[in-house]
Image 1: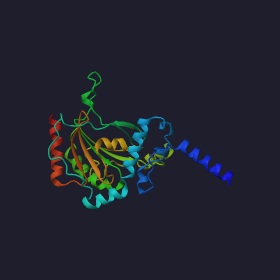
Image 2 (image 1 turned 180 degrees about the vertical axis):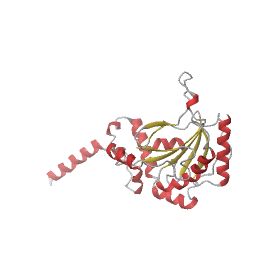
Image 3 (image 1 turned 60 degrees about the vertical axis):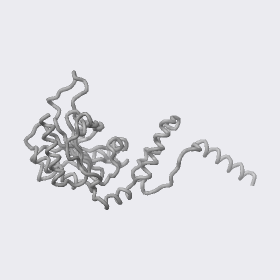
Image 4 (image 1 turned 90 degrees about the vertical axis):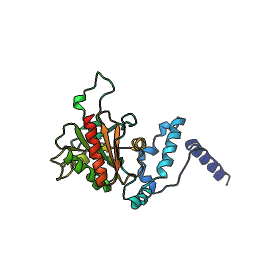
Length: 265
């Protein structure tokens, strides 16, 4: 009996030395689908109080927001989390779209958004589109929503050399982000951009973003992953217009009008 008590105390000491006493623990739930295995193995950060606080805040945030919360909202509004802008956002009030690395199906990578460099010496305005429509899709269910914006947009500006269209699909599965699987996946995704109705119009680029996108989403205040997000950017990478979900006629009219205004700036 004495030996059992000593063993119990020893196990307790080992446990306390590994798991900090104040470390917040939340019970497993369906929301773990947003967390990648990497989140649980950043042990090198345990000595950094600021990093611990940041990770704890993220863990709480992601545990409290998951698929079922997204689906409940989706059933209420069908992906229309907010109304699109009716007018263009003034340049002085516009926020910058966060940088993100994307991959093409041939394996080549690039950074979005394409914008005029902050350094006048390095800037080459001729190679930067005056307007870029960036469509974000986090789940396959939002692809039809994206098409409701991208297809009319592609037709409207098919003859413009100053407009670009990007459809970004986010892939956050830990397994699919591993290098060998990632290469196979990109190879399997080699297909015409957009669809038959719009591929001969504006050259829409289908690109993919692999890995964790939590802080990217936080900057853009994106919560629901089941809907589509549409951003119209100027040549400085600033968000000048934003839409959500399925496009309405009025919203499409607003998007096309704001794009034309950017081309005239």
